[in-house]
Image (tube, rainbow, N blue to C red; front, side, top):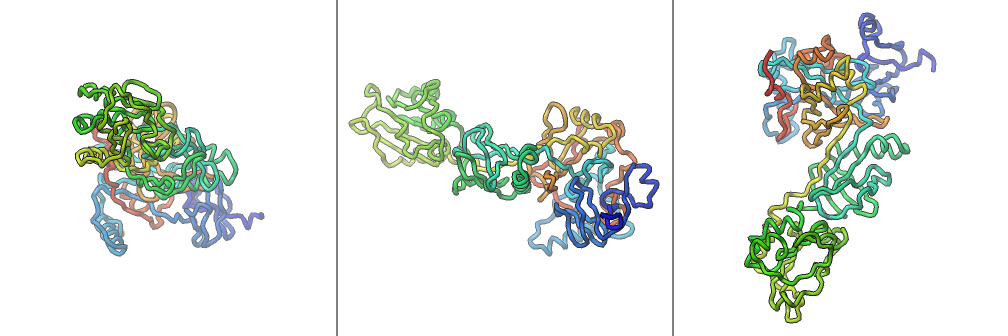
Length: 539
């Protein structure tokens, strides 16, 4: 390609104008000749060459009249809850009024209440590798403390999703592959109490396999992170539809309840309520099946032995392992007939007319039996008082949900956008001097080396995540600290700007350009990110 036809970088990606010699010399930016009809985007290593009127591969940037333009808005959170809006027109009217009230229009804007706003990394842009200061380094004064929030979009190749599925149904064996559109994107992890766990994504699936594997892994991760539905297949297991904040769908059946506890726990919880109504209760569970008369709870209530015999591995009294194989039947087992786990009754204790309740850990399956003269359990109508306790089991089961946690390593050059000395930022995070948020949502920072964060995607603004075709996930990240600490950490103090300036002019490398700002309310239940100051004393 001749030099005259080479694509031209543009200042909206963070590079100064070609004639801005002072900025080029001071920041060390390299600027190629500005010529040709295309512009080159350097928001990621793909370096798309974008023709006028077209978008780059990630659909986040377009070429408008030779200028690289970010298509999505920068999201600011506002602490005050907006009014309930019933239509798109009402939303537009509200935004216009909000901009007017907050002074986001006009040549002489009013000063905004800094404690009421928080700039997020959603739509903030960046480049990768991050060779320049973060696009937003925002100062504010909160409760008398001078604060700085450093805001950027991180490009994460090293990232994954931890998916918690509230169900007792058997989804697949531990370590089984999880497939999306025929490609392996993760695996089944260890089950937790009342939930099945998946680990999806990760650098080996994103970049370590075939191009198709990386592309589909990215697609599935992006949809799940943005709270969209994804259908996966688990080797030797189930077809599952996953969507953050929604009930999982297992083999076409929507899950309703997360179990109240294992079979043993259910015995302990409801033993007193069954006393006098039942002679024996068996709570069927794939993990620990409980038997009331043998259980410590039954012993404490002076229940006589019933003579029941459970086919399984006896643990401690009233607790049995491996009564059946894992499955989608009673209590997460493969059985549809609960009597299949019972052996011969001991005639020394069993008697005609003995009342037996068998139930699952969610109460979704329950049956009432009475022993005949041959000590064979016969189905009978369940007494209303017993049905009420079974219903109580269901009442104590929480709704079955899918939880999606984004996990990423905020290392590499991302930290260079915050400070000249990245180790100081890492130490500040570990010393709890720096509050790390993602789209304003609180994150859990893992112990050990680096800045490895985990965040609930349902607590973040809508469509917080993007992607680049390297392939990698683009996620918002914010670092908030006192101004004094930021300076001590070697922060880019020359690029610190007021919240007013950031609201009206956008990222520092877009000074003078009309900003595209979207103001959203804080999602319900999410703590205000600037409340980091509650344990700080004004200097």
